[in-house]
Every structure is written in structure tokens, then in C-alpha cells.
Length: 300
Image (cartoon, rainbow, N blue to C red; front, side, top):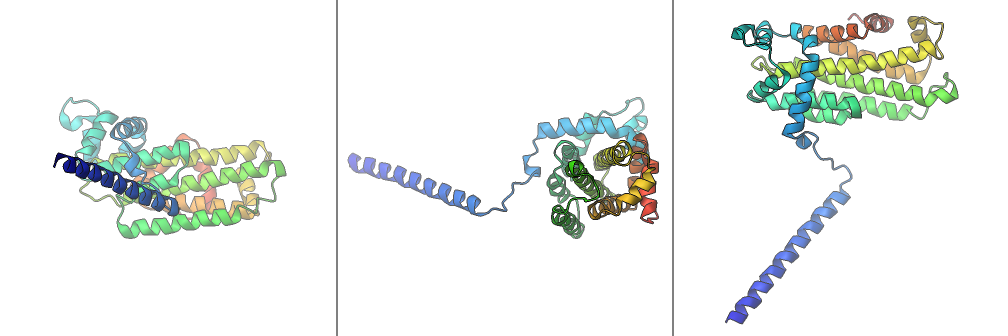
């Protein structure tokens, strides 16, 4: 009897191992065959990394965004509504946001926007935006960004012919970076515009995301401007350089896309407009951007 039980137990273990092996094999085949499988960026964000990064972003950007927020939110941040409580730190604002409905989603979005500073990963921004945008708005954003990326790939083979051969690769790379960052800024503007009125603390991290995005676009514009000011465009005014640049198909496409995205972001709400202009002013490119917008006859 005992021998029969041991044989049964051994058989059960072998069956369990066999079933486990089969499941693992099926999973491996599924992942290998599904070339489009991509893990969620949002799911990869740990509590510790989110709190650390977003706290730092809020501390760095709060002065750029605070005056454009609701008065009651400004008072809470400054501590005036709490007597002598003192100004809230970035980490304290993160903690308060976590206690709010959908607060973690807005913090994750802010994390993703800052993450693009070093990676340029638009997918991270889109993945986290999905949690806070209405389905219709999100689908429209996906369609728009998909069209931009597809167009860049199609035009990538036809490098800007009006630029010296040894400068073409670097120039086109800069244009692509500008387009990518303009998309990030546009998404940040749309996310803020879609925040429900009942959301309180989530507005802080969303506004800071706009500020980060505006700073990234500003750096790209400065890079292109300085490149042509001291490079092939030396001796030209910015407007002269910009108009001559439009004769190059790739530059026309990329800069039109970037400026359109910026303009649309500015038109989303007074808060978005104010934050972008504030950050652009810090980089001393407000006049440059206005020239770009004027060139395209935008009324922003």
C-alpha cells in the first residue's frame, strides 16, 4: 500500500512538472511569435522611483507653474491657508496627490514626461496619458502622433539636400528630436486640459509636466537656432534663416509639425499658454518662437 502511495505521489510530481514545462513553453512561444508585444511602461514604474523623480520635478518647476494654478491651490502650496504651515515641498505634494482619486496616474504621467528628457521615449508618455485621458481624446492623440512618426520615417531617406553632406545627419537628427519633444508638449497640454474640475492636487504634477515639456522644446529650438547662427546660417537673421530653411522638404515638414503642436498646446487653455510662455521666456526664445508662429500665420 505504501509503495502504491509513493508511486502515486511520484507520478503526481512528474505530472506537475510536465504541466509546468508545457505552460512555460506555450508562454515562450506566444512571446516569441508576438512581435508587437510591449510591456506597459506605467507598470514598470516603482513607488520609490516615482516619488523621488516627481518630487524633484515639482521642486524644480513649482515656481514656473504656481501662479497659473487655482488660487486655492496656490494658497495650499504656499501654506497661507494653513496659517504658518510653510511652503509644501515636492515630496509633500506627491503624498497629497497620492491620496487623491487618480492621483497616482497624474504622478506617473509627470514621471514619464521627465523620463523623456534622457530617453526621448514618446511611448512612455502615451502609455501613462492613456490612464488620464478620455478614450476619444487619447485615440485622437494616438492617431496624430502615429501620422507624425510615419511621415518622419518616410521622409528620413530623403535627407535635407540643401545642407552640406557632412552636416546632414546631425541636422536631421535635431529636427526629429524637435518633433518628438513637440509631441510630448502637446500631450502634456491636452492632459492638463482634460483634468476634471474635482481634481485638486493632480493639477500640480500635470502643470509641472507641461513645464518640463516646454523646457525640452525650448532646448531643441535653441540648439537649431545656435547651429545655424554659428554654422551654415551665419550672418543671417533668424527669420531669414527660417524662411530659407523652408525650401528643404524635411525641414518644412518637421518644423511645421513642431510649431503646429506648440501652437495647439498654447490654445488649449490659459494655464497651458502661461506656463509655456513662462518657460520659453526663461530660455530667451519667446521672440524666436513668435517669429516661427508668425511665419506660419498662426494667431497664437
